[in-house]
Length: 255
Image (cartoon, rainbow, N blue to C red; front, side, top):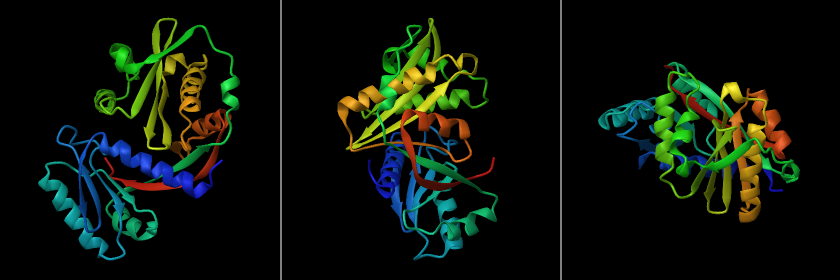
């Protein structure tokens, strides 16, 4: 089991890889700007990461960032402080402008007990690249941004470091999960089960599948993240064998 600091660092590196799947980037004096012509309205694709305000005026950095993203024809939807940057100076700049602080809990795998789960014969777990129609169906949850999330996820599939799997329950697409490998770091991501097919063992089957993959590949770190207020996700991760390692903060522009 790795120490908590290295697990949080691993999660931060995996976050960077997720940004790189969607965006171009450029280093600025106060952070690293990511932007995407294809997804101009998506915070995941248009954000300022590794924000460092120790050497610059925060108010001036904000105005320069807004001008920079405007020049790219996109809207910056997210700021993420750099490791070591006190969050509060960033909060002072953004809170007054209506941005919302988001806190994620970082989890690191500490036990392989989940692999002892008995398989469910009603559920098949298949590669998303081989099941594009079923993959798209896992986004049909009635939310207004379902189409955009499906397009973003489809773009991520172009990254060979990411394996996504779809669960089919008695022939019906039921959920998905992703396994991202970045060097010796692995991240479990995108665990989703459609509302009408929950409590049938779908999440358990998906999680078992990716942990079996991880067991074969043996990365140094296996991490996952969830919103700090998502008690259901936290309970599930604990049952999977993950332990809480720390927090990551970001700020999102209010809609």
